[in-house]
Length: 310
Image (cartoon, rainbow, N blue to C red; front, side, top):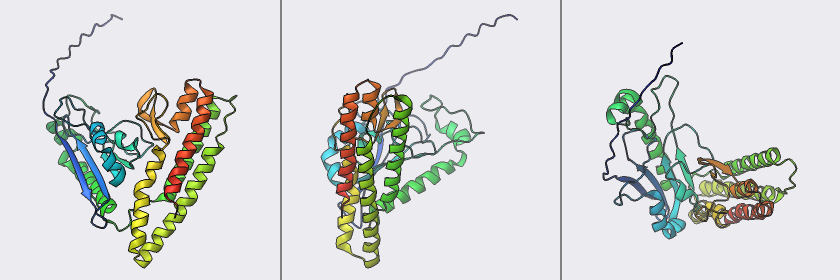
């Protein structure tokens, strides 16, 4: 069988142009000191996946924005809403603009969509991400754009304007428990001969689960009796509890990453690992550091539980 030589030439032009951020700061009606933030940044085309990377000094990236406004965010921000693609709400890595918020203790929601089996070839961050491509292939009629915009608007509205921030803290406790089970499974499988006591994290999560149930009951009672004083107390706790997860200091070798619950994997920046400092320490062969970060991670969870104590 004769060999075939295939020659491919790719022609591309680099253009430096102004990019624009779209940020929405929603000041709550029920409580004007509470804010939620929405962000959508464009660099090329129309796909909701394209959150963008700034190529000129005129564009302010989300990381720089957080660095500039961090004291205000810590005091006031309830949540950061991010829109990208893919249909899941996983542990957060670093795959989008939520990263700087999430790793500094601001609750973040990553809202995603995904394609189907018969959809066109995925050209994430590609040159063909254009209005024409989107109108003809990606989302004819822009129905998905419309639906995601409506959904995001409703989420932002309820977070900012409900008399009690609509957090489901018992659900957060269940997610923490799942993360802990994932950590145990990973450590057992990867290091079968290692004796590492993870019970401090287990105990801290139990503490968080108890606090979550109590504050959820208090929120229900406050709504039943229209207790405006209790509204303010609960909303402050709902706003602030996530700061606890970022209270143990920077992760080993990554001083700007403060969230002890999840972070991008060292070898997979877009993905995420749970209780990253423990796993990072083990990956680098530092068992003593891993033991120290079991305690620090447990302390971060306990701090979040303490903020929720009512």
